Length: 275
Ligand code: ADP
Ligand code: MG
Image (tube, rainbow, N blue to C red):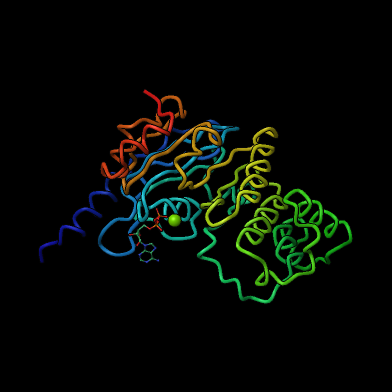
């Protein structure tokens, strides 16, 4: 039987994905990806993507709705299956580096009705330290409270997570990520639907992480703040469009390629683009 175009494309990607990352990938590289293809059906959502993220930097993943940004993060983490591709985190296969990664999913994808207090949610971030069978101690609770304090949510520890505003929930999930004491933070649209005060609070926390030498990769939808917030960009629309320092890679040509030329000239002219 003849293969459909979609199947043929995926077969091609699987073949291309057999090219390997160089061995070794430098141990300071927070995440290196080679030949990553992901598909929910026949049509790939992410196609043959290579990436190499910069250490100790804040990188924005940019692209239109449906470009595969969330899929890229989830597949890199191994939360959803890949058709092909290899991912190394700090030089190791991602499966062996899980405890160095903290992930905050896109808020819309989380079920907010589950019965848990803010403190419970942050304590989940400590599960590696606590262990599955050991008891929570006062020290664990103090550590969780300190993380809540960093995001300005210490007064809400006893509240049900479902009772908070979207911005407050986002802060709590960032606190949980902080509790993990990871080296790489993957944040999916951390500023989506939050007010200006929360955006400020979140960016301050992220900048502190960078000062501590941690790496942050964030899906980011607001092009007007890319220059102020980020050091590097990674543009994607199913395929990789561009990657590199904001000063080099955040160009009109790259944005036109990623957004299919749909961004208006007056808008583009506000973005202090490179090149
Ligand atoms: P982005 O985060 O860039 O908006 P996504 O990674 O969420 O994009 O989605 C990429 C594409 O894959 C979209 O066309 C989306 O509709 C599709 N998609 C995402 N999740 C699923 C899923 N669970 N099942 C089927 N299709 C999906
Ligand atoms: Mg998304």
